Length: 223
Image 1 (cartoon, rainbow, N blue to C red):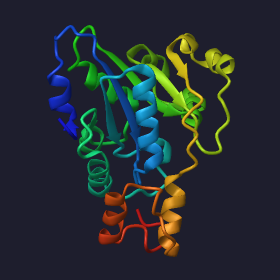
Image 2: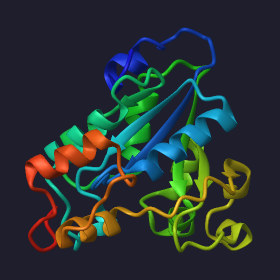
Image 3: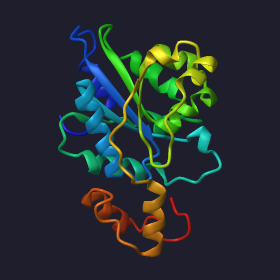
Image 4: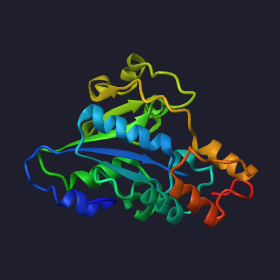
């Protein structure tokens, strides 16, 4: 079922006992780009995931001072980018939830819908893993999922030993990947669009068309 929403996706697994493996890829997706898609495909293949759900953030509390595009545009671009890909789905739970977006709340909501034999893999960048001690209740997060850390442009490989000192048990819950190495960033795409520079090849064509049609990122740091 291409582009499945979180409710239909996880409810279909509830109590099935098949040991489904669900990947979660969160972010502002402002915009979603080919780097995000490469990460999702690499992790799915490496870990043999059943499905990857893209979770656009509502109000990311770590980016409270950074303006982001209206959720309707970010969700629309995600849906366009993954349309027709059977093992990808979309969750709007964070944009529908009032207040700041916390990963813990998202994981808890998903676990209410999963079967007892299912596993959750939360995909994040090396930079996100390095900042995990700053996240809300990281010690509870690692009990609800396995973390899959992937390279990000300009990010250095996290020091797991140092992180273990802040979050005991973390190292046993992390899967470190060294690829894909994709040098694409949403901020660069926004800046290029604002300057009138081509973004062809950086985002799916349908996303490029949407950005142009909606006039996103054209004036200042438009979100």
